[in-house]
Image 1 (tube, one colour):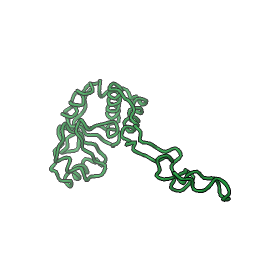
Image 2 (spheres, rainbow, N blue to C red):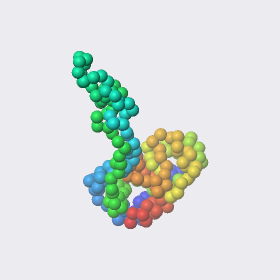
Image 3 (spheres, rainbow, N blue to C red):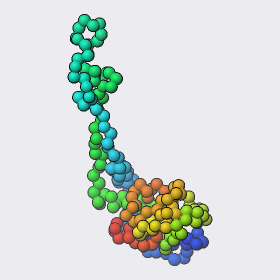
Image 4 (tube, one colour):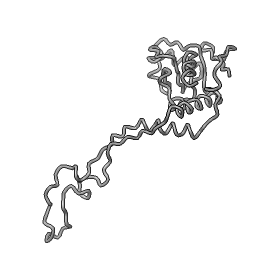
Length: 206
């Protein structure tokens, strides 16, 4: 299949087109697979560092507060009981690992399905290159001319000037090919790939 090139200077599509692989950009939409991979990806981002102390871990409580009978108060064995202020937690949370296993074949299939759906929805754009001066004002003006206010820009390698220009713009993200993932691909209204970046992604997923 062919993808038309977007001319950054004019904001319109040129007559030139780039041939891309149907195996990567013309796959069927697999909702179940994408959902599973997204769930695994977000779960893997969780720190899982939540921790609480049970009654056995809270400092103190070695002595019985008062004798068992004769005080008129309810019997108590420790000041660190979960019923007491400052006591332990009944089912104390402990650090845990939330990661879910997703093999390479599943991950690659989900990425191909997402890219194909972006093409079908006309949310994926292709440009020869994306040159930036390093100034946020210049990039914001260019994106406004292109009517893009929520966009992911993917380049072959890290472009320092483009990154510096975009880092203070809300809803604009710049990354290289190694930085794309299911979350940022579906999280923006438009995704702009440079031709070298597109070829690199194609090689990885083919």
